[in-house]
Image 1 (spheres, helix red, strand yellow):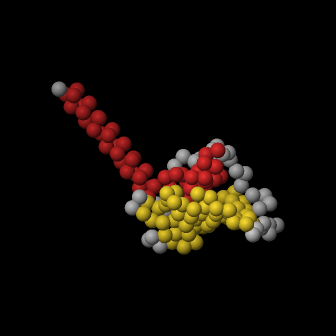
Image 2 (cartoon, one colour):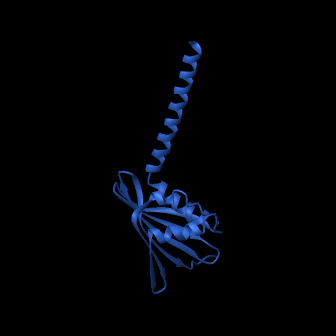
Length: 146
């Protein structure tokens, strides 16, 4: 009888620990910087797992190349990134929160390569399921570096 009680107690203890870990993980995913870091990992390190979870279903992507503006859907972007899964970019990355309130945020993400920068502005919306990326506008700039 003591063995059954001991096993039951141990089992309940393990289940309670795993539920705390799950709650902590879900709490992390609700934070505003989670989709930003997930996006950066996908772009710079080819880690696309979880990216679809942080993109709004109708997310839009634009790429400005001089006078030309190219538009991509969520599906096209995910397909392209999945084809480049595991590829690491040779760049330094930084991001800056430009504006944030309880419902929305604008984040600037800069990928610094040797001769140019890739600058993306991410628009995020706060939903019941956490922060989601709704729009990404990207352009390439040639910075003045010493």
